[in-house]
Length: 299
Image 1: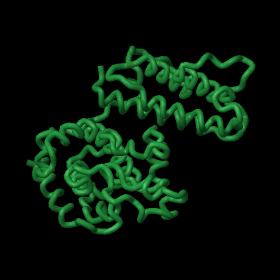
Image 2 (image 1 turned 45 degrees about the horizontal axis):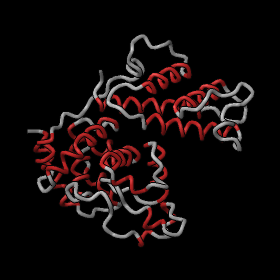
Image 3 (image 1 turned 30 degrees about the vertical axis):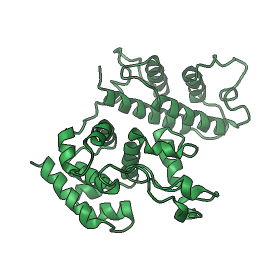
Image 4 (image 1 turned 30 degrees about the horizontal axis):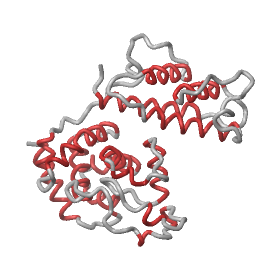
């Protein structure tokens, strides 16, 4: 039986692979993948089987063209798969595995475990709670213990799994969050009102989409993109980024989106900082936390 973290990662990998396999087709001509996607969406949503006289997507998205229904279906499937609950395999995991194999023209699974022979095991960072406490000496031990499993999962999922990547990632998070204390910008966010460069085009967007998460996601555009990739509706529920799991995962999403592993690999703390901050605010403290993290992990 895989670890809880591995199962969550497999579900996310399957969700993204399904989304790509369905949306790689364009136009309004029905494809075999459309029938498979519609059937999986109905399974995951506990809906009846599609009537034989109804085209795919019309039951779920009746006023949409095939191309629009295809994208909406793929997006909804991704959300449903990424939100499968349970620390052990669920029936939904088997449905997802079967559908993905069909879409990819793979043979039926040989073992009882879904996903295992489609996605390789993911290496989890070998960081302990005690090490993390030493890296963030001003953080609450209770807070670190709460965040720890989500941080490990995030680093595994976004390939932050070498000592250099781990130390750069964690030291930036420690600074950005005030030693893991803050997951939401203290400012009300009025200064972000009307910032069309980050997608704030509607009244109230400044406060609605102010910085949240351990690396503060800011602006309507970033909330939308982050939510799409994490399988969560952040546009209508922006405060979800303050939850422990999404506060961590959104930081990993930002890290990957901005290719920060390449700067961590080069041990370039200045470029990591400029990418996250837009400048060098708090640079000395970031350097200090990085030095502490290296001392802890390299000891």
